[in-house]
Amino acid sequence: MSFTTGGLFYQESVKLTNLYLNKKNWPKVKEAALSNNLLQARTKSTTQRILREITARLILLTNDQLQLLADGTHAEQNHLLWLGVCKRYSFIQDFAVEVLREKFLCLEIMVTHDDYDFFYNKKAQWHGELETLSPTTRNKNRSVLFRMLLEAELLTSVNLILPALFTKELVAVIAADNASLFACYPISDRDIKELL
Image 1 (cartoon, rainbow, N blue to C red):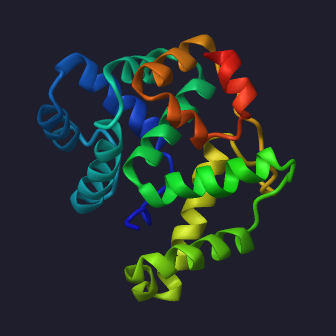
Image 2 (tube, one colour):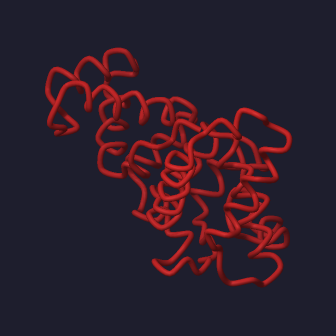
């Protein structure tokens, strides 16, 4: 539940990905990003926190996914950044599969804060540690998650669900990793089969 920092970090993630594709070494990427203030943060501690968050997501992407993140369209990049978030945080992946995608499959057009709260409370029954989070942290997590969904172009600004649109290149890099990851997006099983 440590995703209270930022959103998808689109620009920063693309910069770090390009740097990684040149250096092929995450510790050197972090060192270069810190020494050159690549992320343009005001303080060193902020830079370190953001850098830690972004790299924790990016290292979970395959080399082909990182290459497409560097060279792909804006939509492909956003969908890959969402994939990195889902791979990093099982809570978010579960929300994507159990709430976002399920609502899409049931032809419900909106995801609400109440949907999040219901999902959170259901998870808290199985994961007692969720009960220890303060209401402020819970609200911050909800806010950040909805912002990431907006930035990933999976929700509109009024929380309407947008179907995920995949290119052949995006399908290929996700399928080569794990086809079950398509469930992180609002897309039907039939459409997934057609894409594959």
